[in-house]
Length: 590
Image (cartoon, rainbow, N blue to C red; front, side):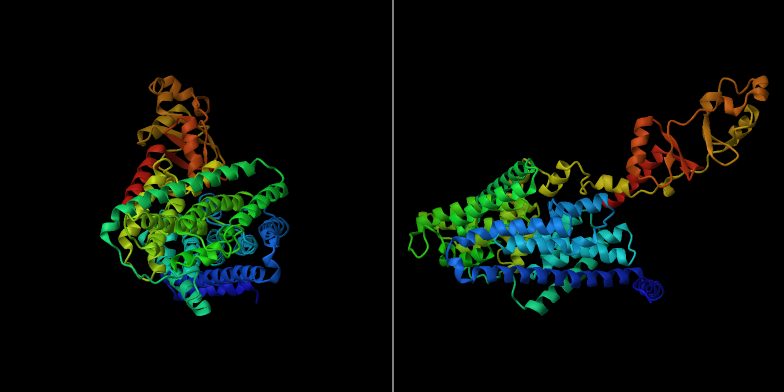
């Protein structure tokens, strides 16, 4: 018995013994488990590569600066040779594109391709994050499992969300943040009924991570200092600073991508980007890789990992003001390094760089305040809250940022400053650009964005439910007298004219015959075929609603005939579309 036969039997058993709701819940749990495994594998693979490269004796000389460019070349070679991808693109943008344009169908190769390419990019020191590639992996896992069990578009989309929630939950051991990220970034138009499957995926993925890795998360921190309400003005200032940092990062990233897009040869692109990236890492080593180890060092007030391998400061004692200046340089170089990694063709995202930039920004701000003697504030608290601020500003995901930091710190002591800083940072960034960078990328590519709720409602209206079949038909061989009899029984003023094969030959409107319908002689002599008109256009039975509305606009019509396999089916009216659309829109907003 083949796999398809076994699957068919399993589905038949499901239909008989399990309700659809429970089956969806089971599948969401499976998606969470598989996504959790994928996240664990990628995390361990990158850490292994990174540890292998940085623990060798030859890393003491300058060969280490070659790692990033080697990683970028390996990434591109693998993408082209194995997956036939030249543009790795933005993972989350690709997910939104699949939901909006591909009926939530993501190719099988995406379940593993970005895991491999991002492992080489980040493992070899590329200044990017693993979160975006693994989110695409989780989404692809959800989509393919949904296709395997014959889920419809709505449930396929939900499973994409479950995969997203699962991988984020597993990477950070933060199930609430994973769930919220999925709802805030991927499933923007999520309903309440989707909450439980997303929760099941998040929890199951987190359990997989805990069982396999224990508490070995990217980083965790136990709060020592509590929130002081008198520090609120300083948190407001930090929020503005995080917004400026976020905006600068996005602006430089987009400019870098535009620059490299003009270079047609992908190897030239990688050579230029990789060389500049290696130079940046040579000058400022803390921008190597994801950077979570630097955040850990800042939280523990340990300067040694930050100064290590620096050609300027390694092994030297420096005063706090010089260290503060070095932190500012690190922020600038991290923005440049991450932009070069992503823009030149590397496989990675902005999630980890955002947290790095936020952490260093928050720590530097607190250090500055403490050095000036203006006040004494907790440097660790401001580091954590700064991470939230820049993550929120870059990802356009304030709730995700708030709950992620809250879960990583094991409590909600900083909830108020997290909310303050994220709100101000988000407002600062979105004031000039209210559209998220992921949707902006879709607009740049000339593709439909998935966040337009009204268009999504229109897209999912079915022609079958909109067809009106109470139009009185008349044969093309009939005469005007026959039409008058039909008119007397009809409430409509349009009459489809059919031939013997039930095909639409034309239409006659009441206005076409109004002047001659009471002429007795013409009633006997005028044939319908002589007075009928061809419709301005017609609608195919399986046509999508975007095309239907476009035809209505071009034809400047209120009613258009529907044809299925050449046979007349009925009419669709623009007014009926608007009525159904309005009801759906009101229902969703409630």
